[in-house]
Length: 202
Ligand code: ATP
Image 1: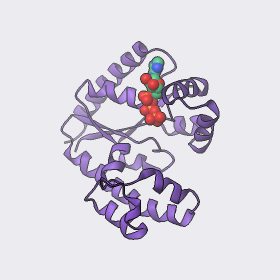
Image 2: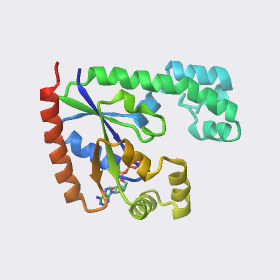
Image 3: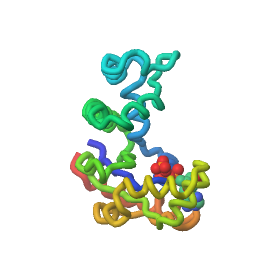
Image 4: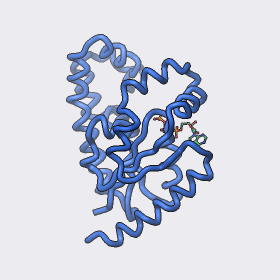
């Protein structure tokens, strides 16, 4: 089976930027954020279960899930939040596993922002962490999303710490510097991963 490289990092660390660099080498990317949308797409079992639980008011007029309404509903209701996580997390894991089976590149990348928090490293053969210092992380996220630093700090506080992620890492990309340094780190890792999958029993 295809070797699975897990890719994670805190908010605004550069996961998408790094994943795009691997995609330039034609590596298949499985992105948990995209999968999380697919399992509640119109016509899905996930959306049907949510509609059965919360009524059709939870849908937009075009049939898509009204995410902001759902966010508001779970914000003040932990039981509902647990129910939703219990419903969707297994669906997301199954879909990611199915997508891994479909991968055709020598190895694939499984991008999961909350990999360490949700202990999903078990789905991967190696864990690659994109590491940045907090100041850079806050500066890039505020600039990208047009939000204030306090908002980013509160998200940071709810995520695994930088050290917890580094402790779980097999490989680390340092993204404190410019894009050129990022590209050369990805180029080196790509060669290492190719060599590793050639050594793997097929
Ligand atoms: P999130 O978890 O919030 O989805 P992410 O980890 O996917 O974020 P990116 O969106 O890739 O992070 O990067 C965050 C922002 O920082 C983007 O605007 C991106 O263009 C910028 N960025 C990433 N790496 C660098 C770099 N080396 N130099 C300058 N800007 C960068």
